[in-house]
Image (cartoon, rainbow, N blue to C red; front, side, top):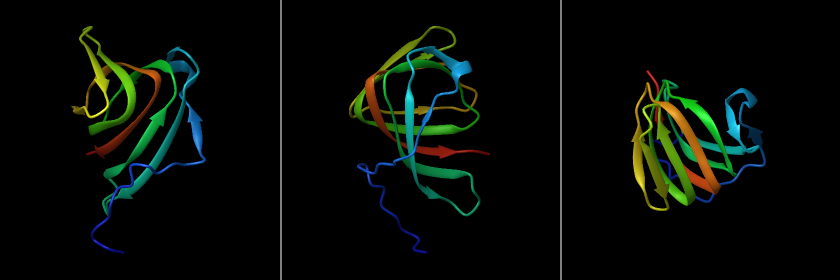
Length: 116
């Protein structure tokens, strides 16, 4: 295996999964995840994630860096602070984050996740 790998922002997967019903606030969002790299320790992941419209509760046990590739989302913190995310936005979500994720229409993002 090479020590170099490109991430394909156009990668797709035939596998989709519904957001956990207990977390959903609105809609019936379906998610697609194409993990393109996992390090040898199994705690660093990169790939593409997509979802259609919906809103659900999120709670992060990992650190995540993202870039929105398509669409728009709204990330709202537990304290009510809201962040509208659009194409080209780069952002991080730290472990311990609690709040909601809302996909407006559909969205695709590139992710880098680190878990301790």
